[in-house]
Length: 210
Image 1 (tube, rainbow, N blue to C red):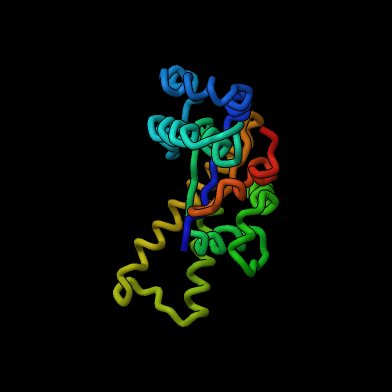
Image 2: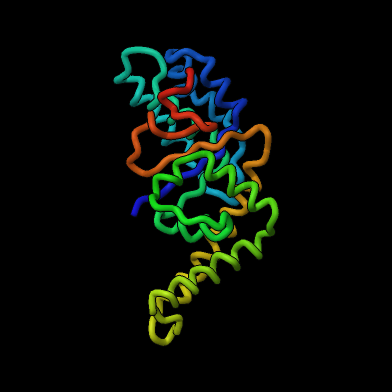
């Protein structure tokens, strides 16, 4: 399994970066000036370290022979992100299917902005605790249907797994709540996914004008 990665991108910050030429961006990153202009991150969530992102962009620029491409856009999105949420793709069936009351056949569906929009609408009709509890109960029912034990004495992984599901769903709820800010745009990707196939505001980065 690989991680599905969601990031919330500050649209104003990203637009400002995209308005700059490659040379201007290189100078700004090399001087450290952009560090003071990076949008503040939400302390509840991880995001990429500024110094690592600067290095990624400068490495890209050394090899680039033209304007900004999807790879550079992904780096700039990372810079403009205020929060990141990630999860094994296989677990997302547990976290999305129950509240949407729908079964999915393939993990690729979680790369679609439409699914996350629907989840946001559904979570808007729930609360954090109820959502998390519904996921845990559904997970327990699935285990029972497969004939697997729910007794911690028989499987010591039961309680840690339950707590992991609870923590991840609570943080997902908070992430989706945060995503409702009009100034933020959802970026969707996966580990090892080519930059051009990441999805920003419903469009692949290869299709986004830069």
